[in-house]
Amino acid sequence: MSPLSAGENAIGPLVEPAASLSSQELERYSRHILIPEIGIAGQLRLKNARVLVVGAGGLGSPALLYLAAAGVGTLGIIDDDVVDVTNLQRQIIHGMADIGRSKLVSARDAVAELNPLITVVLHETQLTAENALDLFADYDLIVDGTDNFATRYLVCDAAAILGKPSVWGSIFRFDGQVSVSWQKHGATYRDLYPEAPADDSAPSCGEGGVFGMICAAIGSVMVAETIKLITGVGRTLVGRVLFFDALNASWREVAVRRDPVATEITVLIDYANFCGISPAPDAARLPSIDVHELALLLDQRAAGMVEFDLIDVREPAEHTIVSIPGSRLVPQELIFSGEALGELALDRDIILHCKSGGRSATVLRELERRGYTRVIHLDGGVLDWVAKIDSSLAAY
Image (tube, rainbow, N blue to C red; front, top):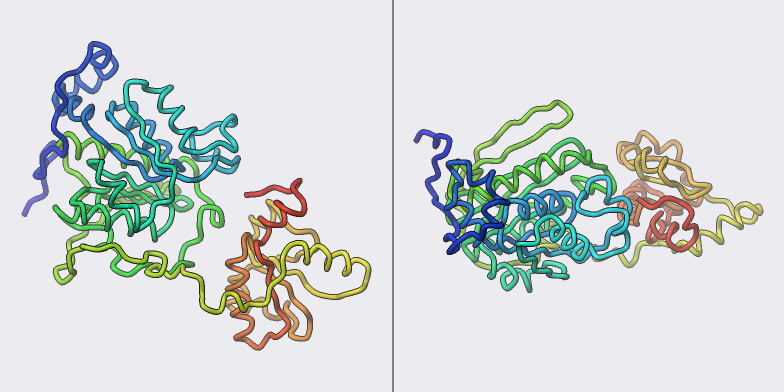
């Protein structure tokens, strides 16, 4: 079968048109209406559309702004986070005045400032398997701007059960990818990734960093796909994944087909467990201390009362941004490879720390496997240290 030509869409429009456009709307959306493929009919469909955006962060920011500018009649937003200064490098819907505010409220205000003609519905909650179907039921299409595997599978599955498309994107450092998941008409996210990647296979943006501008590149493609689905124009990304490498300024695409032996998605599952992020059974038994205990030990070490090594297992750039005084950087990959084991004495007390406690717990288990018996780790990591011991340090 030959691929569809430009402007051809075998699926058809997702949304029925609204009854009319006001004179104010005709003026505001005139540049859309002048495009033959959109026209009055397409703009009426956009006015009647109900789109739910999951996440008002890096991808949600450009998505919400462009969806609002395009005249999507009802925009729902799901988020339960607040704005902090580290968001502003890429989450352009928020500003300095929004630090500490709900991302939902900040996003709503930005959308209202851009286009007061549309309706914004706020859902201040964490998306879960218990509420996803009810939340999605009132919308035509889901735009998934989340940053973790578990939620992406949840969005894919809930949309599939309801027969709705979901437009998803993901970003990491200089790389991004975007596609449309729609069980009714083609492949889903599960056909691309049948098995969930290991929870630690890709660090979060807070650990690995992200090239802020890539959010705009991927977010704008997500909006383009959303508008094409609503209006029924063009060749969509159903059955294709688009990859962007910002460092080398290159795009490529990969075709994705439905797995012929895969069963239809009919129920939601435990996504934390599916993605391997449920707490490990032995997590509570790992030897650990809190930041107040560490502060006391550091004072005692300075007074010559105790001896131990405080080892930071994060990446060098993280250590440069903020470090606990008296810590020594030994990145975790050097420990796992064995390259840095000569720097860690078997007969000396060792305290490990990372950003929040996850990586240091993983390294602790590895060192125990290698015969180290005098190792503990810091609960809460450097984030707890900044929050509870020294707020003058940078939090990232």
